Length: 399
Image (cartoon, rainbow, N blue to C red):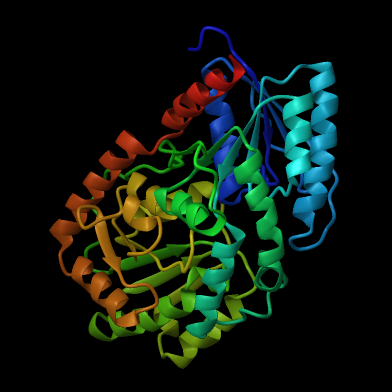
């Protein structure tokens, strides 16, 4: 418990029921900060449904323009206006932005620091990184790269919106990247000043929801699980091609894909063309408790994404006691190695299928990796640890 709690204004475009990676982290971080004695006010977008209430967390909603990418500017404008109003009524000690889904100019950063409080900016990833991931998806002939309005907006306007990421780099008192890969990405793209204060704090996961079953898994049928938004950048097309190779050698292996998005029909058609329809199920979504059960029951989680700022699915798998096969690219090797799963070459279906088969062919190794994965998460990737780390940053800025 901190000696004196601070009032933290958390500005995030996502907050439950808008889950997503950002919404989930802000929700759980806020609760963990309250446990340390802080007061949290979240300023988020309206129109997403009734916000989930938490003790000690005040939720304020602002309007925004319903347009891909452009919403980040309108939300940022209205959030700053509401932040100043909040500060006049209940003084704020630290402002915590969650980028890149809020776009402030350097002038707006200066206005906030002069009239409200110091700024911590969490860097969840970059628009240019997202764009590069989509370009890779297009090269790999992933479905509908140009059909999704949000993806199309990123492809066409990421260069423009990068200037707001540069503003965050230059205008924040402290930046916090969610991985060493994200920090390096910003260093290479934006050439920050020599005194740039950027720390790395990997986001944690909910270790109470995601936990091992404690029961032996079915050894007769291998169950592979893939979770994430059904979007081109997530690499599901390459996963289906790799799974076709796995299924040819191990016909009893099944694949479950869980995620919302516009690609379901295209992925179903691709599975049919590959001759694996009977072994593949694609679910558009399920309650969290059911999804957590799928994490526990799976023999292996596969995460083939072309770009992530961090990527929480592998950690949720590890927390569930389930090994992970993922790309040896970007931030993923910071969390996953051969002791808790396997790494494969991004967009290489042969490498992916080889990694999957290598794990599934060794049931004892799967169990050992699952145990070590859970241990790693409890040691290094919890929201309690996140709250302690951010609390130290807040205290340094507020004093």
